[in-house]
Image (cartoon, rainbow, N blue to C red; front, side, top):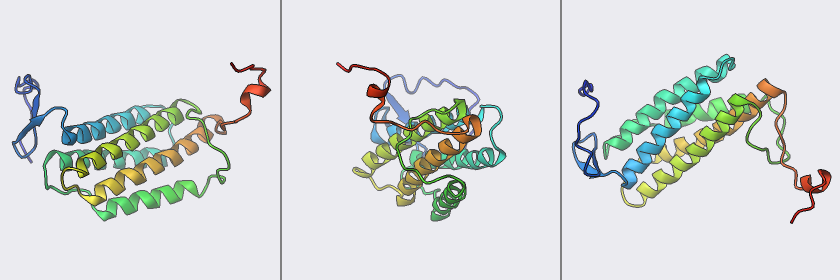
Length: 191
């Protein structure tokens, strides 16, 4: 394990670069930094979700595991050529996804993000997961990226969608469906 930070500010990034795990310095807006920065944002969003009181134990256990794996993914992205995410983590997400999805009714309409504090936080995490995946694909266009990492983020966004459905039912009993005809039913005249 590397050195632990005892002093938080170093002033080394004041010129617009940051150090990678292998010691190289890159611009703070490089594709690699965008990728691991968005993974960090995703991990933080999941932390906000986990802070919502009363989550089902299975959801908490699942997302706590995801947080550890996202930390691994951030480490992987911080060191070019380093690999931590493996096929087993992708398969674990698929197993979790299938397990949570089995209890849900088939989806016949689009759903609106929301449903309660936990479900809304989960939808936000889902959209950040999609952005993290896009950032990783941008990096993959310029450098070699572990293919399991892109698969992991793709499955994670799907899992977060399913968990948002689970949490909406847990908090409110149902999710809000998108309705194309909402304006006519509510007396909106458009415009």
